Each structure stands twice: as C-alpha cells, then as structure tokens.
Length: 466
Figure 1 (cartoon, helix red, strand yellow):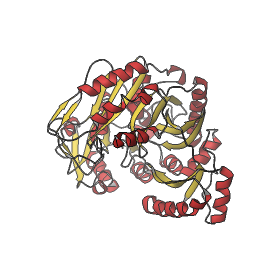
Figure 2: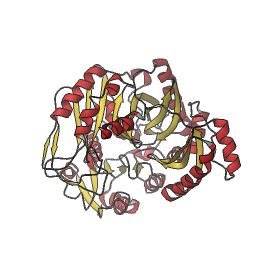
Figure 3: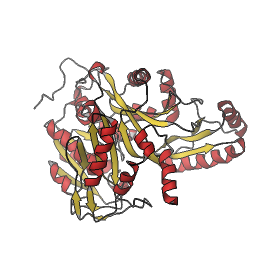
Figure 4: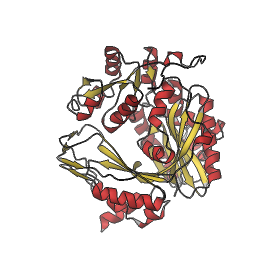
C-alpha cells in the first residue's frame, strides 16, 4: 500500500490527508470509484436512496447508508443529507462521481467548510466554468480558441441584440449562460426569428437554471464534438491526456464515444491541449476536467468545460494507460501528479457504447427487473456496470446501466472488436439499446470516421422512415 500522508514541505492543501471517502453517487460510477479507493487502501462509504438500498454493488463498500427516498431531490441531490452522512460515518472526503452534485459549487464549498475534502475542483473554479460567459472570458485570456461571438451577456434591447447577431453573421445560436446538457439554446437562421428565440430562451433559462442571462455565438453547421481531457494537481502540475470524439449524439446526449479523435493534425491537437493546460493554471484548477470543443474546417472552438469526471473517461484510460480516478484521489490527497506531459502517449484506439435500459426505437425508458446478464469478454474488452440478474432498474434515474468499452491497435480493429462484443452482450428482462448500437457499428459513415454532430439524428430519422 502506498503512503497516503501529505507531502512534507508542501503547503498546498495540508488538510488533504484522509483515509475514508464517501461516494455521493450511484450505479456504475459509484462502483468504479469504490474500486479505485480500495486499491489505494481507502475506506469507502456508499450512500443510497430507498430505491437502491437492495442493490448488490453496495456490498463492495465498507459502509452503506440510506439518505432518503427515491426522488433524487430527496436523496442524491440532498446536500444536507450527504453532509450528515459524512459526519455520521467519519468520512474525510467525498467523491461526487458525475451528474448529481459533481458540479455544484455550493456543495464543494460546504464540504470544505466542514473540514473535509471535495474530490474535484474548488468552488470558485466550478462557478467560473459553470457560467458560460465567465468561462469564455477565462478561455480567451488563456488563448484557447473560442466560437465567434462576444464574451458578455446579451443586453435587453432587441435592437442591440440584432446588431450583435448581424456582426457575427447568421446562423447564430442563443444560449443560456448557466445552461448545459443541451438545454437552454435556440438556433436562429434569420433576423425575423431572433426576438422570439431570445424571449423563449430567457424564460427557459430562468426556469431551468435560475438566471435569465443569455449569450450569443456563431452557429457552426457541420462541426464534430471533440474533447480534451485534463488532469491537474494542487502544486502547479497540469497535463492534457488525449482527445476524444463524441460526435455521435442524439438530442445533444452522447451515444458512442471514441479516442483518439481521428483526422486532426498532431500539431493542432498539441497547441490546443497546451492552451487548455495554461487555462487550468490560470484559474487554479485541480483534479480532472474536460474541455469541450466544436471542430470544423480544421479549427477548434471552445464551447464549455465539464469540471468533473466524464461518463466516457474509460476511452482515455484505455488509450493513455492513465487511471483517471486514481489520479483524482491522489490529487485530492495532496500528492503531485505521477505523470508529466512527456510521459503521455496514445496507444491504439478505443470505443465506448453507452448501454441504456430503453427502447432502441422510441428511446422510452424501460425500468424493471433484469432477469439475466451475459457480458462480453476477451482481449481489449471492458465493461463498467453495476447490474446483474435480479437487479431492478429504477424509473427515478438515468437509464444508463452499463458502458461497453473496447481497445485495439487500430480503429478498424476496435470497430470489429466492438461489433463482436455487442453480439456477445445480452441483458434480459428490460429493453436496451443494444440493437441500436449494433446497427450504428454497421453504419458506413461511422466506419469511415469523422461524422459531424448531426449525423446520428439524420441517420435515426432515415432509419425510422424505412
């Protein structure tokens, strides 16, 4: 077991030593974090809702505690309940996983105020990057390329808004400053539609995000969605860990991810990766994070930063050999990064399919009892899941039940490996999107590589018309 005590002589986060971690999440990511903690000799506490209290994966923790009823607002999003669970169990740190409270600055602050460690960025960094306008200003200051458009909120005067849109050039996209997850945005193709789009988006933003603040940018019509993974410690150490292509999306939600992103010159990737690292240093970022870009006509355009672990982090782990969750924990413990930029290299190609309990044609959720599971195996195949026969999929939460990840020396081999793994995988008792993934992996455009972010929805529309 490695020494987890604070680094002698360092002043950053001397309170960071802890021997137990409360995992404030559920499902496959809770189990993923628990395994990383166990390998570092850290005691784990898993919280659960009443809907999850019989889940088998809770047995992996040293302690499990129920924090409330099934609705997320009364359990996994209940900050007071989680903080109380930390006090009751003596947990010295909390890992939020992704979703739920992972990007909640107030929660990060509350954990810090109770003398514990939030395994993620500080509250000020979460706030900066969670506000799309503030994030754009920070990125421009660090030299990160951004989508054309002002780094300020839209004024109230419709005439002024019209002038800004005309200067950018149509089509434009109106976005909520506090938005995310594909919500709070409208594409506008001509001046006549601008005023209505602004009014509707303002109200949606006010209701969904608590602020009516909007901003406007150029709408890129055929971009790819490219991500750059970063990892930073508390001592000025920062690296970027490869590129992922997450362009296969439905309603702004990722379906298939892969890495590295093909067809992007190494020099361009290195330049943008280094700019992302510099931005992290300027805002004092710590832990893991993801810079999201649109990529069109050979140019990168920053759109947002996710200040947390991503669902698709296994793609980067498989190609880089870097255990991102382990690194998160070590950074939170106050250690310097174990790796430097020159240590990072991309090995082969990885693809991830998100397996959801949903109808593969209508996408309606399919809660219920899982009656049987057959998982694929063999070289280069990884399955991150918390489910087994007898597990009940709840209607209260996201329908993700597994992530199927493959790795191979080339993209072509990775595609063949994924096709084989999908054919092997079986889940009984509920509907899943396995048939959809099997079809996507046969799509000639996907096989050719580099489809834009609109390709999957067009493909689905054509599929439905057949």
